[in-house]
Image 1 (cartoon, rainbow, N blue to C red):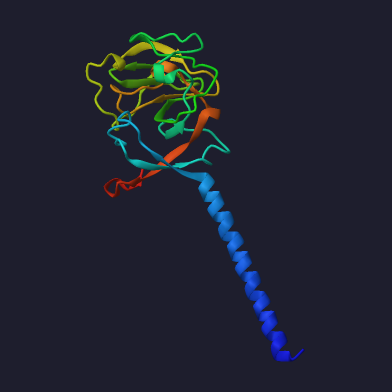
Image 2 (image 1 turned 135 degrees about the vertical axis):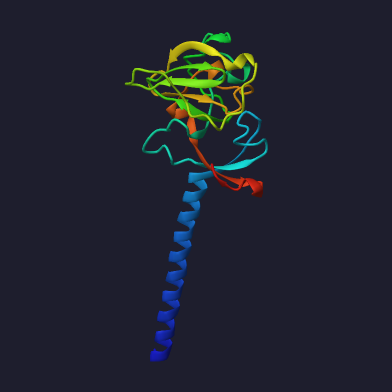
Length: 214
């Protein structure tokens, strides 16, 4: 085989190998990102004023692979079955405003997705007054009001007050919407197990005037 032809074949083979390598790398990156980051459209006004109806956010599905959510984060999750009917626990009881919020959810997750803010975690004690969460973090001795400049005023809604303290069970998280007077959340159907959390919302990308980190 002539030397020139041999060099041409070697260069062609190297080019093909490079193209295959780059294509494989891009495929891996695309697949990873497609799994790791998912878009989510805000379906209701329960997270106003932080997130508006129809706003689109990005959710990091790998955020909890090696850890757990943190109080203050906004997460997408599966609520317990019966949450849309505001059923508390396996007995499908209903909570009474002014008393205690729902302290234990049902055993099965619903197929729908909700988005709310984590306001308390395992072992924390909380009560709600005027729409504000007062939390005695696990291992502490006093209730402290959350720094909640992000919430909408609760007004005179009956959802604003659940003044009897409850304790969040092990491995579960208490979720509330920022629109405290108009949110279907853990107050009515209980804390959410870690395993039911889909991911952490970290950025808004639509509409463009809402573009930015959450």
